[in-house]
Image 1: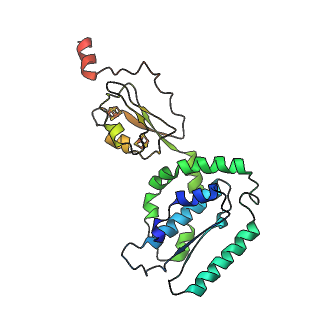
Image 2: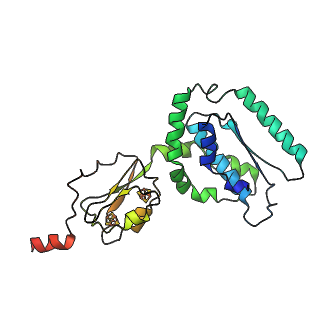
Length: 239
Ligand code: SF4
Ligand code: SF4
Protein backbone atom coordinates (compact mmCIF):
# COMPACT_ATOMS: atom_id res chain seq x y z
CA UNK A 1 0.00 0.00 0.00
CA UNK A 2 1.00 3.63 -0.36
CA UNK A 3 3.25 4.73 2.50
CA UNK A 4 0.80 7.61 3.03
CA UNK A 5 -1.63 5.09 4.51
CA UNK A 6 0.73 4.37 7.40
CA UNK A 7 -0.84 5.41 10.66
CA UNK A 8 0.62 5.74 14.13
CA UNK A 9 -1.92 3.16 15.30
CA UNK A 10 -0.50 0.52 12.92
CA UNK A 11 2.99 1.04 14.32
CA UNK A 12 1.88 0.96 17.95
CA UNK A 13 -0.20 -2.15 17.26
CA UNK A 14 2.88 -3.89 15.86
CA UNK A 15 4.79 -3.08 19.04
CA UNK A 16 1.93 -4.21 21.24
CA UNK A 17 2.06 -7.56 19.41
CA UNK A 18 5.73 -7.85 20.39
CA UNK A 19 7.37 -6.83 17.10
CA UNK A 20 10.88 -5.52 17.84
CA UNK A 21 11.11 -2.99 15.00
CA UNK A 22 8.98 -1.43 12.25
CA UNK A 23 10.40 -0.48 8.86
CA UNK A 24 8.45 1.73 6.45
CA UNK A 25 9.48 1.93 2.80
CA UNK A 26 8.21 4.82 0.70
CA UNK A 27 8.81 6.27 -2.75
CA UNK A 28 11.40 8.98 -3.30
CA UNK A 29 10.16 12.42 -2.37
CA UNK A 30 8.75 14.44 -5.26
CA UNK A 31 8.41 11.26 -7.30
CA UNK A 32 4.90 10.31 -6.31
CA UNK A 33 3.06 8.63 -9.20
CA UNK A 34 -0.10 10.35 -8.11
CA UNK A 35 -0.63 13.82 -6.75
CA UNK A 36 -1.10 12.70 -3.18
CA UNK A 37 2.55 12.84 -2.05
CA UNK A 38 1.72 10.28 0.60
CA UNK A 39 5.41 9.75 1.29
CA UNK A 40 5.61 13.19 2.91
CA UNK A 41 2.67 12.28 5.08
CA UNK A 42 4.38 8.99 5.98
CA UNK A 43 7.54 10.81 6.95
CA UNK A 44 5.65 13.27 9.15
CA UNK A 45 3.72 10.42 10.74
CA UNK A 46 6.94 8.50 11.34
CA UNK A 47 8.63 11.47 12.99
CA UNK A 48 5.61 12.11 15.20
CA UNK A 49 5.40 8.43 16.13
CA UNK A 50 9.09 8.40 17.04
CA UNK A 51 8.47 11.25 19.47
CA UNK A 52 5.51 9.41 20.97
CA UNK A 53 7.67 6.29 21.33
CA UNK A 54 10.30 8.37 23.09
CA UNK A 55 7.60 9.73 25.39
CA UNK A 56 6.52 6.25 26.50
CA UNK A 57 10.12 5.11 26.94
CA UNK A 58 10.63 3.13 23.72
CA UNK A 59 13.80 3.60 21.70
CA UNK A 60 12.70 5.55 18.58
CA UNK A 61 15.30 3.72 16.48
CA UNK A 62 12.93 0.78 16.51
CA UNK A 63 11.02 2.67 13.82
CA UNK A 64 12.57 3.71 10.52
CA UNK A 65 11.40 5.08 7.20
CA UNK A 66 13.52 4.97 4.06
CA UNK A 67 12.69 5.98 0.50
CA UNK A 68 13.48 4.13 -2.72
CA UNK A 69 11.95 3.37 -6.09
CA UNK A 70 10.52 0.08 -7.31
CA UNK A 71 13.63 -0.49 -9.43
CA UNK A 72 16.09 -0.09 -6.57
CA UNK A 73 16.11 -3.60 -5.19
CA UNK A 74 19.70 -3.26 -3.99
CA UNK A 75 18.89 -0.10 -2.07
CA UNK A 76 15.87 -1.78 -0.52
CA UNK A 77 18.01 -4.75 0.56
CA UNK A 78 20.67 -2.42 2.02
CA UNK A 79 18.12 -0.43 3.99
CA UNK A 80 16.39 -3.53 5.33
CA UNK A 81 19.67 -5.22 6.24
CA UNK A 82 20.97 -2.21 8.12
CA UNK A 83 17.63 -1.88 9.93
CA UNK A 84 17.72 -5.53 10.96
CA UNK A 85 21.28 -5.03 12.21
CA UNK A 86 20.16 -2.07 14.31
CA UNK A 87 17.23 -3.99 15.77
CA UNK A 88 19.50 -6.90 16.65
CA UNK A 89 21.76 -4.47 18.49
CA UNK A 90 18.77 -3.10 20.40
CA UNK A 91 17.54 -6.59 21.24
CA UNK A 92 13.98 -7.67 22.10
CA UNK A 93 11.40 -4.96 22.55
CA UNK A 94 11.60 -3.38 25.99
CA UNK A 95 14.93 -4.96 26.97
CA UNK A 96 17.26 -2.03 26.35
CA UNK A 97 14.51 0.31 27.54
CA UNK A 98 14.21 -1.52 30.88
CA UNK A 99 10.47 -2.07 30.44
CA UNK A 100 8.83 -5.39 31.22
CA UNK A 101 6.10 -6.66 28.92
CA UNK A 102 3.25 -5.73 31.24
CA UNK A 103 4.41 -2.16 31.80
CA UNK A 104 5.14 -1.72 28.12
CA UNK A 105 1.67 -2.91 27.14
CA UNK A 106 0.03 -0.58 29.65
CA UNK A 107 1.93 2.35 28.15
CA UNK A 108 1.18 1.28 24.59
CA UNK A 109 -2.53 0.83 25.33
CA UNK A 110 -2.73 4.23 26.97
CA UNK A 111 -1.04 6.07 24.16
CA UNK A 112 -2.87 4.11 21.42
CA UNK A 113 -6.18 5.40 22.80
CA UNK A 114 -4.83 8.92 22.43
CA UNK A 115 -3.74 8.58 18.78
CA UNK A 116 -6.80 10.46 17.42
CA UNK A 117 -6.14 13.27 19.92
CA UNK A 118 -2.47 13.46 18.93
CA UNK A 119 -3.41 13.53 15.24
CA UNK A 120 -6.02 16.24 15.72
CA UNK A 121 -3.63 18.38 17.74
CA UNK A 122 -0.79 17.94 15.24
CA UNK A 123 -2.89 17.97 12.12
CA UNK A 124 -1.27 21.08 10.64
CA UNK A 125 2.24 19.73 10.99
CA UNK A 126 1.22 16.32 9.70
CA UNK A 127 0.24 18.01 6.46
CA UNK A 128 3.53 19.89 6.15
CA UNK A 129 5.70 19.64 3.04
CA UNK A 130 9.23 20.64 3.91
CA UNK A 131 11.73 20.73 1.10
CA UNK A 132 14.78 20.96 3.33
CA UNK A 133 15.48 17.63 5.05
CA UNK A 134 17.25 19.32 7.98
CA UNK A 135 14.02 21.07 8.92
CA UNK A 136 12.45 17.70 9.56
CA UNK A 137 14.70 17.08 12.53
CA UNK A 138 12.84 19.75 14.46
CA UNK A 139 9.37 19.29 13.00
CA UNK A 140 8.20 17.67 16.25
CA UNK A 141 10.18 18.33 19.40
CA UNK A 142 10.45 16.32 22.59
CA UNK A 143 9.16 19.26 24.68
CA UNK A 144 6.20 19.73 22.38
CA UNK A 145 5.10 16.12 22.78
CA UNK A 146 5.57 16.22 26.55
CA UNK A 147 3.44 19.34 26.67
CA UNK A 148 0.82 17.68 24.49
CA UNK A 149 0.34 14.92 27.07
CA UNK A 150 0.85 16.98 30.23
CA UNK A 151 -1.61 19.67 29.16
CA UNK A 152 -4.11 17.25 27.77
CA UNK A 153 -7.41 18.67 26.64
CA UNK A 154 -10.64 17.18 27.99
CA UNK A 155 -14.19 18.12 27.09
CA UNK A 156 -16.92 18.51 29.69
CA UNK A 157 -20.65 19.12 29.48
CA UNK A 158 -21.85 21.65 32.00
CA UNK A 159 -24.97 20.06 33.55
CA UNK A 160 -26.37 23.50 34.30
CA UNK A 161 -26.32 24.44 30.62
CA UNK A 162 -27.06 21.22 28.74
CA UNK A 163 -30.55 21.25 27.20
CA UNK A 164 -30.48 17.67 25.85
CA UNK A 165 -30.78 18.73 22.23
CA UNK A 166 -28.69 15.62 21.36
CA UNK A 167 -26.59 17.38 18.70
CA UNK A 168 -23.31 16.50 20.39
CA UNK A 169 -24.19 12.80 20.64
CA UNK A 170 -24.97 12.69 16.93
CA UNK A 171 -21.65 14.33 16.12
CA UNK A 172 -19.40 12.24 18.33
CA UNK A 173 -17.45 9.86 16.06
CA UNK A 174 -16.88 7.25 18.76
CA UNK A 175 -20.18 7.23 20.64
CA UNK A 176 -18.57 8.66 23.76
CA UNK A 177 -21.58 10.73 24.79
CA UNK A 178 -24.16 9.18 27.06
CA UNK A 179 -27.34 10.50 25.58
CA UNK A 180 -31.01 10.16 26.43
CA UNK A 181 -34.06 12.30 25.69
CA UNK A 182 -34.59 15.10 28.22
CA UNK A 183 -31.47 14.05 30.13
CA UNK A 184 -28.26 15.95 30.72
CA UNK A 185 -25.64 14.52 28.38
CA UNK A 186 -22.45 13.08 29.78
CA UNK A 187 -19.08 12.53 28.11
CA UNK A 188 -17.58 9.14 28.86
CA UNK A 189 -14.00 10.26 29.40
CA UNK A 190 -12.60 6.76 28.82
CA UNK A 191 -14.13 6.58 25.35
CA UNK A 192 -13.58 10.22 24.36
CA UNK A 193 -10.82 10.73 21.80
CA UNK A 194 -10.76 14.50 22.41
CA UNK A 195 -11.60 15.54 18.87
CA UNK A 196 -13.65 18.57 19.95
CA UNK A 197 -16.51 17.95 17.47
CA UNK A 198 -19.10 18.02 20.24
CA UNK A 199 -18.01 21.44 21.43
CA UNK A 200 -18.10 22.80 17.90
CA UNK A 201 -21.60 21.37 17.45
CA UNK A 202 -23.26 22.47 20.70
CA UNK A 203 -25.62 25.31 19.69
CA UNK A 204 -24.25 28.72 20.73
CA UNK A 205 -27.45 29.50 22.63
CA UNK A 206 -26.55 26.63 25.00
CA UNK A 207 -22.71 26.66 24.85
CA UNK A 208 -22.79 23.77 27.27
CA UNK A 209 -19.50 22.13 26.36
CA UNK A 210 -16.22 23.47 27.60
CA UNK A 211 -12.57 22.58 27.28
CA UNK A 212 -10.50 21.67 30.34
CA UNK A 213 -6.72 21.77 29.98
CA UNK A 214 -4.40 19.80 32.26
CA UNK A 215 -6.99 19.56 35.07
CA UNK A 216 -9.26 16.76 36.25
CA UNK A 217 -12.77 16.64 34.82
CA UNK A 218 -15.61 17.07 37.37
CA UNK A 219 -17.46 13.83 38.17
CA UNK A 220 -20.58 13.13 36.09
CA UNK A 221 -24.04 13.86 37.43
CA UNK A 222 -25.27 10.58 38.98
CA UNK A 223 -27.80 8.51 37.05
CA UNK A 224 -31.35 9.34 38.13
CA UNK A 225 -30.45 13.00 38.65
CA UNK A 226 -29.97 13.91 35.01
CA UNK A 227 -33.35 15.35 34.09
CA UNK A 228 -32.91 18.61 32.24
CA UNK A 229 -34.51 21.74 33.53
CA UNK A 230 -35.60 23.54 30.36
CA UNK A 231 -34.36 27.13 30.29
CA UNK A 232 -37.72 28.43 29.13
CA UNK A 233 -39.59 26.60 31.94
CA UNK A 234 -37.11 27.87 34.51
CA UNK A 235 -37.85 31.44 33.38
CA UNK A 236 -41.60 30.84 33.55
CA UNK A 237 -41.35 29.48 37.10
CA UNK A 238 -39.31 32.51 38.22
CA UNK A 239 -41.61 35.08 36.64
S1 SF4 B 1 -14.45 15.41 22.11
FE1 SF4 B 1 -16.66 15.18 22.05
S2 SF4 B 1 -17.12 14.48 19.96
FE2 SF4 B 1 -14.94 14.16 20.28
S3 SF4 B 1 -14.79 12.08 21.04
FE3 SF4 B 1 -14.93 13.36 22.84
S4 SF4 B 1 -17.09 13.40 23.33
FE4 SF4 B 1 -16.92 12.65 21.24
S1 SF4 C 1 -25.21 19.78 22.07
FE1 SF4 C 1 -24.96 20.92 23.98
S2 SF4 C 1 -27.04 21.31 24.73
FE2 SF4 C 1 -27.18 19.76 23.13
S3 SF4 C 1 -27.13 17.81 24.30
FE3 SF4 C 1 -25.03 18.28 23.74
S4 SF4 C 1 -24.19 19.42 25.45
FE4 SF4 C 1 -26.40 19.41 25.67
